[in-house]
Image (cartoon, rainbow, N blue to C red):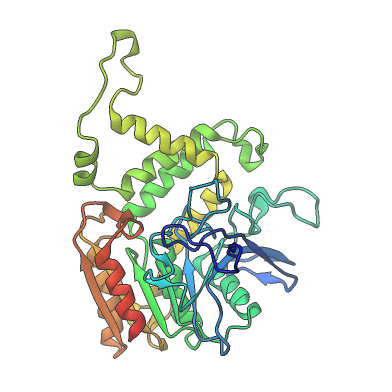
Length: 380
């Protein structure tokens, strides 16, 4: 939702969508999860930007990454300048142009930002689900998004787009709902988690689960396992960056210390990681982190028929897959593999590789080359 000036024009802030607010979709139709378990009802929190046209053909679904949420553009208050996580690409005259398109972004099922997840109260018991929440897969996330899109009266999306875990969702959309999306744009992603990525996630989960406050997942929300969650975030954040990017930004900058303070953070990179860890625990639920990282580990499109080619056999959308040279979490080769499998199936697919020193997070950063690719893809 935008705010308006005295003569009814939408207020804009530096080309942004302006003031926004979230909406809730409550679904009372049972949701069965791929690995077992069921919710009798659930809530989905989402935001929209722009206007849905009369024939409902201009909708774009944005899928968030691991630690993202539904708030990907605009601000909640005129005095709050902290904008959504993809504000640089969504807005009037931006690549995801809200003058042309109706943008939708929802918090994934299992989340902690308004969508039903482990920290939500189970209506059947009156207590939080915690680890009694069903195991989540990327397919479950997409199934819930499809219900939201149908609730909004949209038969076919102009595009599904996302990076990292969001890219996985975009690919899953093409497989599970081949008639519901014209275009799939997957950024800095993979068709399956490799052993290294699974290993990093396991270290993060172990840090959380070994925090004494975690208490088997039954921690109090007023006293969360902040030490474990902060460490998990610090370690994961390293994988989102690159050696060259870190060296250029921080190098070996540090403050002098005395002997008794030898283990206190003194290097700028240490302070940065501690800041990242602390800010993360203030906004993210530890159990959601466990569930989402496990969903990433279990993601493997090759299970849909025994090979990646078999998985893509029935897709109908056009694809754009983008890799980034310094991404060592989901490196370019893993992104190229997706396009090669699509092309071997005779599908319409393009691959682009962007040179960047910013690592896996490159798709979130200001990138004119990425913007041009997305704009051109939407014009096809």
